[in-house]
Amino acid sequence: MSFYWCVVHNRVETEKDRCPSQNLLGPYGSEAEARSSVDRIKERERRIEEEDARWSGDH
Image (tube, rainbow, N blue to C red; front, side, top):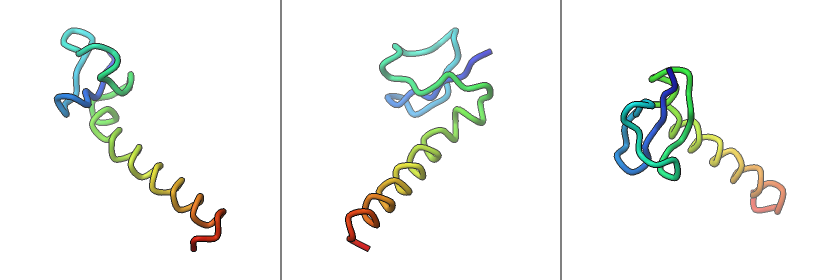
C-alpha cells in the first residue's frame, strides 16, 4: 500500500482516500514516512539555503 502526505489537509492519505495529485507528497512506503515527509523537506531546504549562503559569501 502507498501512503501520501496531503499538503491541503495536513494528513496522511492512502490510495483509497487521497486528494488530487497536485496536493500530495509521495508515494511513501509507510504511514510514518509520509507523516515525516514535510519535516525532511524543510530540513533539506534549510541545508540548501545554508550551502547557498556559504557559496555566495553571506556566512
